[in-house]
Image (cartoon, rainbow over all chains, first blue to last red; front, top):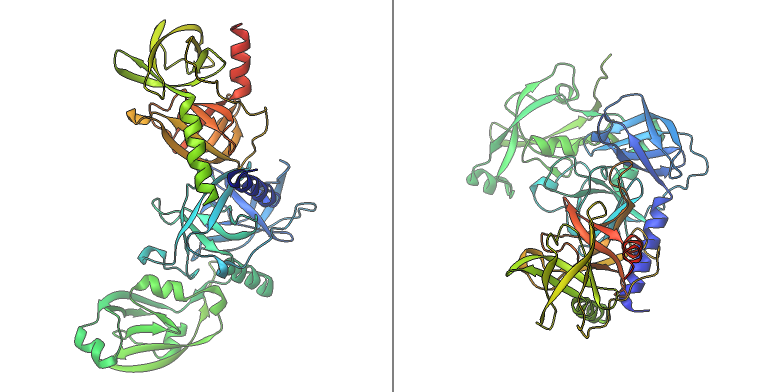
Length: 296
Length: 184
């Protein structure tokens, strides 16, 4: 057997292994998507493919249809978690996504199963890649229609991420398994996925070079607070209109998207430091991240 | 390194059994030298009773269409005296989803171009449609009728068209049935 046949056999084995925990998800009108049996009774998929709030029909690897319930969703990283009773369906072998490197051969799986292959093209680079999921995997492969929410697997068939083309038509992205684990852990811990909330409206603002030098920061922009909602965590922390937020915790805030990205569900209840400029002078405020009030 | 050499050799072997189907200097598509003394290609590639085949060694030979099935999109041509051994076929049902596959053809007039990928799915694209090998590799006009081969260089399908970025190939068991029915 030559090296190519050996690789080919590895790829088919990886598809077979990954396909054992693959679900079809019918969460939107025209095009179904894919889900992964992440933990026993929990199926992870791409949030943008689930247009319903309660029950959704999903299809087991053996083709049988089941009814699942939307257990929680985190639109900031495009992950939805469905609860389902699916005895006999294998739980995915989730690998350490921190071990993934640029150049690794990966397979994207869609329900059916279907498969495409390619390499990890970059990890977390470029402006579009910044997200609450942390570093995203940019993929040099084709995500065919219906592949969103499906697993990105390595050549051993272990799941290293969840594929999504939702945020942009031009990128083929995967959310690393570590970020998915955080969401699922949060769901198991609290019984739901909370939406983190600060209570400010902001706009991007340029930081003049002189100010950057004075503050010893290398950051061309930040956000200026244009509204503070009364009774919000931001109001309680003393944030005011006109404050310029430079960083939140360890995250540099260069535009309002960064602020959203910093407010991950697992941050709810945490006290974090907001570094702000008030009247051009730096000051640190402690903010306890709240939970976005749910619509009644 | 071993794998790169294997791909180069595989491409060479596939080029030898892939012909250019032309008509008055116009490229019509590709064809596979199989079975011996014959070439099989897509019906949409050959619309006249005779065409010219250009072999990989540069020789041009006239070929006659002896069977044509527009529904299956397959055509059989006889071309005696090529002196080139016919393509090796894979056993039926040996490829699976994820199998490495390689296509050779003449996309947009580029002679003997190789593209590689994996089998994305096997079956119809739409419910009730015809059975295809759906490959995750790029085809372009001129690839039609050329071989899709496995990692050992054995032909598994006949490339027929593209559906977006997806390549659609007629599985060789269908091609074999067509050739048998043509009684060559």
